[in-house]
Image 1 (tube, helix red, strand yellow):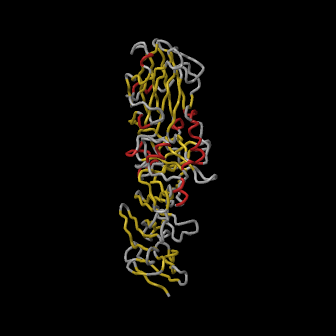
Image 2 (image 1 turned 180 degrees about the vertical axis):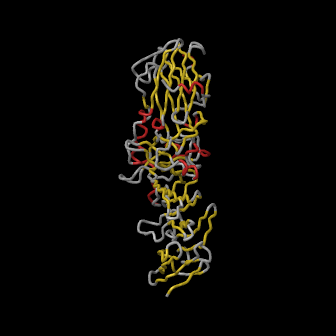
Image 3 (image 1 turned 30 degrees about the vertical axis):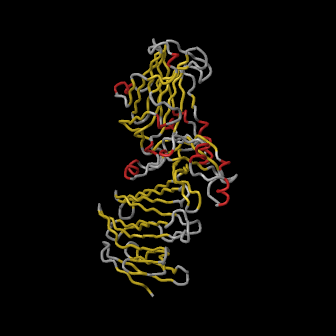
Amino acid sequence: MFPATLLAQKPDFLADTIAIVSGKEYAKSRKDIRALSKIYCDGEAITVIVEVKDDIIENKTDNFETDHVEIWLALSSSAYPSNFEYNFHPKYIYGSTGTNQKPRFFSVYSEYANGVGLNSFLKNFDYPDTKKVTEQNLNVPKPEYLRECRMDFGMVHYGFYPDQRKVVHYNKDNYKMLEQVLEVKMGDFTKGVRYVSEKTETGYKITVEFTPQALGFVQLPKLEELRFMIDVVDKDGQGKKATTILSTSATHQKANPATFNTVRFKKPLKTNTSPIPDAVFNKLDFHPIYTLTDTAWVSTSVETDMAVLGKENLSKSITEIKFSIQPVKYVAYEDMAKNTVKRLIVEKDGVNSRPITTEYYIVNGQVFESELVKMGKNRKESVNNYTFSFPDGSAGLILKQRTALNPYGWGKCGNCYEEVISLMRIKGTDAKTLFAIYQGNSGEKYCQIGEQSFRGYYVANVEWMREGKTLLLRLSSWDNTSRKRVRVSWNDDGSKVAMKELE
């Protein structure tokens, strides 16, 4: 049996009576079929209890044509980007621009549509026809290559039975396209499920325990909120169509998490199986969706954008959605001066825009963030983020920010960017920027180091002349015809910064 501690715990969700949402005519009376449900979370697992009052229990071999309980579990809308159309998830329009290309997924802003169907998608919105796609060389699949699909990212659907036959994972086939996009094989979610079915004087009772593995998709480091729907399916033996369905959701719609119930756990479900400590996530606004594959949990993400039809050509109502693996690297260390540093690197692959690398540094408890837009495969990083120690023992950080003038790479200045490279001193709860380098190739190429201008150059490299006290900045001209060197030094405590151009 399941932990007895649940008996003393107040449910996170309680429905004394589950409403009939379909097939009232097959129930002899409202007392013929009744049900109640409870949901608990003790931090380690979610327990669902469903008690069914039924005068006749059908146990047929067909998993759908027999009495059973269906439980839907889905991530809440807060797990997705703010402009993600949760009302339409998991239904999408998809297509590809070539035989070897991964499919691309499209939807519509909810204020413009009540649903996502292929005919209305092509007829009622500004998706271009075949002629326009060809003539304008637009960056979308031709209409004839579009199809409707379901992408059950973040949602699982199970079936449980009075005779306690094997649990059924109903929607596992709806992960096939996700597997293709992520280039993984999904894991066996059912290994995280166990349930007990008991006969009662008036019907049956089903108790189910879901661990994070059973959910298949979880946020890190904990799951505080979950969308769910519990359906009790009753077959009265009057033929295949004689079905009564009771549901916790009055707006009951299958495979539409926007119509599900919401439960918020008093004790959030612990979900962190990564090497990254909870304390790191608790300090950052980064809570990735971990997805269970056949080999491991992997960090995944959902990104959305107005569908890019072509160069500087955005749709008025259509969005494009991208599901992808999100590489995450973590390292923690202590420097020579006993400063603790935790470093987290997150790779974010945009829908049509440039990829972005975000580096988080937690130095002595303080958070510093660096966001770097990637400017192409051939561009080598000249200056990297770096931690060090000042001679007085305080922590130092070289932190870079890089933004692209056009995130899509359009126009005459498609590869133009701006950088800020800051040298910071961190002591206790104080953080101070000693000096900063501002440089970029937008318009007139510029480089500003502190108060000195080096127009036409950029800082190509930094190296220590004396670690923690003296830096040598190596500058190159944008046309790569000349070089400069600048020495930057300071006192042991970071005060009195001095710069000198060397011969």
